[in-house]
Image 1 (cartoon, helix red, strand yellow):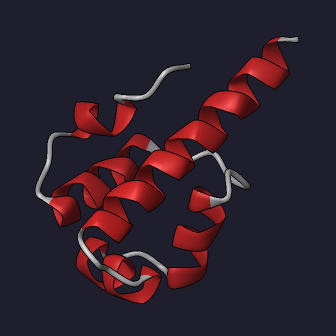
Image 2 (cartoon, rainbow, N blue to C red; image 1 turned 30 degrees about the horizontal axis):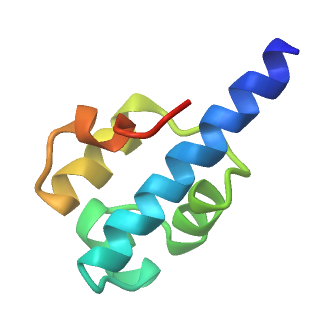
Length: 76
């Protein structure tokens, strides 16, 4: 059960990142460039296929010019 809850959180975080990216009209490639990450990695994060590190999450938040905690404004 805990693993299911964790995966649900990873997926919701990915959805939040996708929403923030689309609000800014960034492609995955553009976000990857701004965050100095791989475009394929961005796609995996948005699909909830990988658990993101705090370091990479901070890089994405910085690319969006928001605080890292703003990425967690979703209902778990």
